Image 1 (cartoon, rainbow, N blue to C red):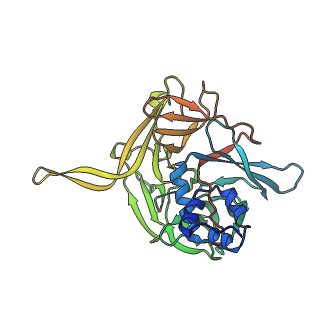
Image 2 (spheres, helix red, strand yellow):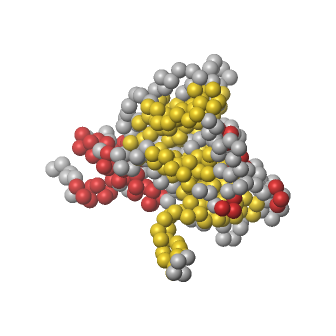
Image 3 (cartoon, rainbow, N blue to C red):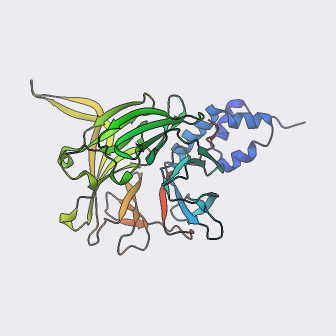
Length: 379
């Protein structure tokens, strides 16, 4: 007698805990297994289960090596660190056009990267070893400044936002958006005037929004521009009052842990660069005072929480925060006196803990939080 499948609910609950590589093999069992694992409801239930089970414990390292023997070609490598006590393991490698690439943070297991010149925009799932090149924009004469990659939770659509100069005019810029699964870019906003992108930093994606630091000419302050990926509408977030008048070029935005917006303050010349202030944009309940009747009430919403990284003797200006886990911040960059270039910093104890990444083909790499997923690129 042929073995029977377990109850569908039990079958489903078992499968959502199975690693990605095993699921890829299970799809070959029969049509039922293949259709069940390929269904969008299962894909995103498996994704959410992976986030809960592993709590952003996985890190992804991406690096690029230019091929000396192949003209106009480079090899892209993705390594995973599944455990801080084990070296990085090669997950996927592929050839891409020769260019300098910017890597965006992992989003639901997908990694978007784009060429600084003319190589285009790509989206890759290293776990399933699938990669697609995004269609080029039809905007003639435009020059790419930066891109962002995010996920609309309501529609389960992945969207790419692109900021370009128009016709070599630095004062005229266009924001375009593409929904994966479509082939056309559409203009979202055209800006006539200075638009703040320090060092062409790409927008940061967190909690359904793109964010970037912005400032206008002849302004002594700065703010954070937001863009709702679902509603495709713009907004403004005010930075903490204590830093609002500082030089905006000394700040950067990061998405730590995939959904935690962080404003990084590197304006620490007066303290020998041994300090780094992090402002985390958190949702919670805070107390608001009513001046009219001297009454305090609790109000839910987003607010800034300051955290500080201190080194007792060495400067921190060559390192940046790239991930967040519990009370630890992952720092990527060189710090004198530490053996590793990736270090966890405990916000409670002030101690650094190095991560041994092992052997990778380039000393120039990017590292971010990651969750392994079976999200398809055919969306």
